[in-house]
Image (cartoon, rainbow, N blue to C red; front, top):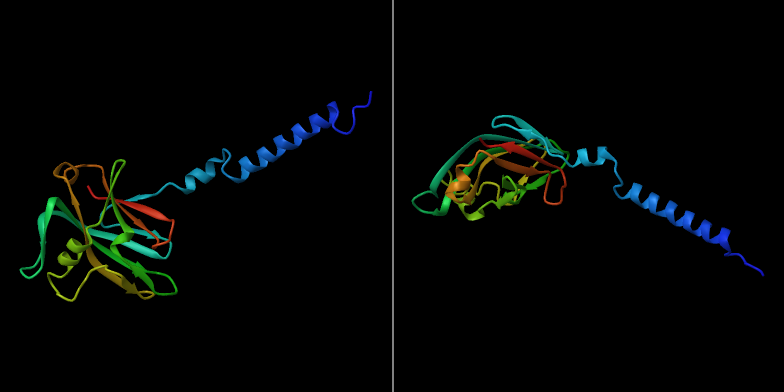
Amino acid sequence: MKKGIFGCLGCLGVVVVIVIIIAVIAAVFGGGDSSSSNKDETKDAKIGEKVKVDDLEYTVNNVETADSVGSQYSSSNADGKYIVADVTVKNNGDKAITVDSELFKLLNGKKTATADSSASTNANATDDPSDLGFFLEQLNPDNEKTGKIVFDVSEKTAQSDKLKLQVKSGFFGNEKANIKLK
């Protein structure tokens, strides 16, 4: 009786090759290397501290709550409570970057809130009606801009001790950092 090429020894060889392929795939696509999970962790800064995210540097200058923002000509009223973060962004890169309210998220534990762009615009226009805050603002290298980011949240969320402002490295950037707001 002939066993041919794929006899008992051949089948064992195929199994070994499959196991090796699976091991290589697991190693390449996140197989148990603990250093790769540490890379995804975000650092927490405090109010007043500068936090660098790629070429951008963020500083939360202060945070307050409000029921409404804006001026007598243009204002917004909160559905719940506004959290207003006064933030400075600096471009440490070599080319201009677009800064917008989309770079900011408000974290409360596992819950995420996005900025209210119209309320943010109204909050920034109180001192200068032409100031739109971070609405698609071009920030050239070595320049910085200070503006207000406004989030409309529930009263319970506004009182939370877990609030963090998440900032990221750009529209398509993956780097993030958190700034504790309380």
